[in-house]
Image 1 (spheres, helix red, strand yellow):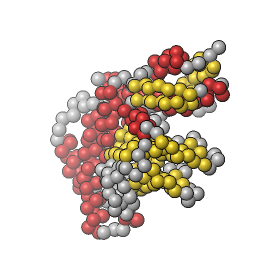
Image 2 (tube, one colour; image 1 turned 135 degrees about the vertical axis):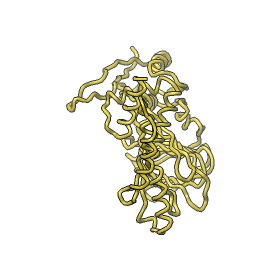
Image 3 (cartoon, one colour; image 1 turned 90 degrees about the horizontal axis):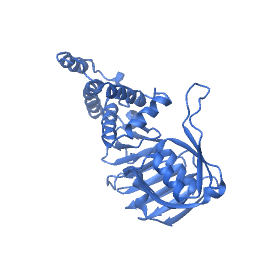
Image 4 (cartoon, helix red, strand yellow; image 1 turned 45 degrees about the vertical axis):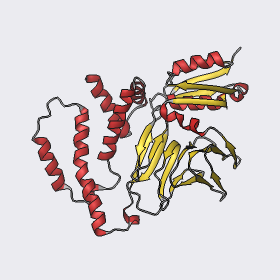
Length: 341
């Protein structure tokens, strides 16, 4: 019970962005222990989202609602209550203000431009997350990704903003297009499923369509319409893109804990593995970096993947470990990859 309470406290620090690198690694290790832990993490995240609205509650008179809920809480005995009970109490306190806020907007008919409030969800490195949007759409956020979206889709367009990688399952609504904006592209859809890769640290932005239809709008005003099993890749360094056929489903398998590689350069393979397991992997040999690789890893541990890679690819690797930085924090585990002798 004590370990569970400590984990809950660390998760609370993670959501409030007040966590050290060492504490974050503890959470990631705990998550990788079991599917049950991942499910429990999702439940806590949902409670956190409900208890931390994006609008400013100071503008709403919630004193009476707060006192009413608190009086009920004080009327119960919470002896030795775990931290999760505290989370649930906070969420319960915030439900009435959310309802009152929504009613206030409807009764006063305030223009949506004056009240648009946003929620921002971050999936730390080493963790993937599932987000249910207000319109019924579902988004899976990959490791190291961030999604920003309105608390209520009140305009003619359903706009969301992505940094990182996400798989979108969009609720069909032809009258209200769903638009994903990244640094380099906008993806316009109505009801469909697609994967977007748009990490700011990468020169590559990619959109892969599983089903339906999307239009990819580039910043240079060029547009391309994708059909199922098509993938478009933009290289922002040279400002050129390529459109080609692919098995689209494999690009979204990461959300199910599966890493599938089909004739991909080892440099890309290690980059994706590093993001998934929160490890800095550097390929030191350009020949190794260009070597094509084909494999599927399903819920293997990081150590097991390294072992399999060493057996099936012409590589060797060296662990550098974590190094202490100027701010006394430790960076990520580091591994250097070389050509096998």
